[in-house]
Image (cartoon, rainbow, N blue to C red):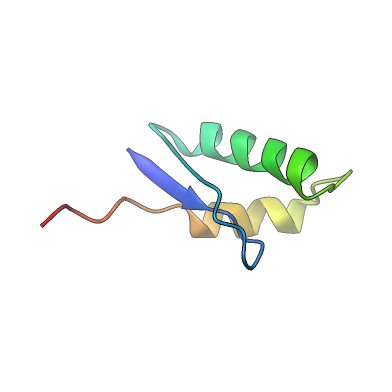
Length: 59
C-alpha cells in the first residue's frame, strides 16, 4: 500500500492505493476538481510521484 498527501499547502486531502499509477490518477483528478487546475503539467506529475510513500508503521 502506498500513500500520498496533496502538494497544495494547507490542503489535508490524501489517498492510498496499491500502485503509484492509481495515486497519480487520483491526485491529478483532485488537482483539477478541487484546486481548479485545468492542466496538470508534467512537472506536477513528477512532484506527485516524488511525494508517494509507504505509510508509517503503526506503533
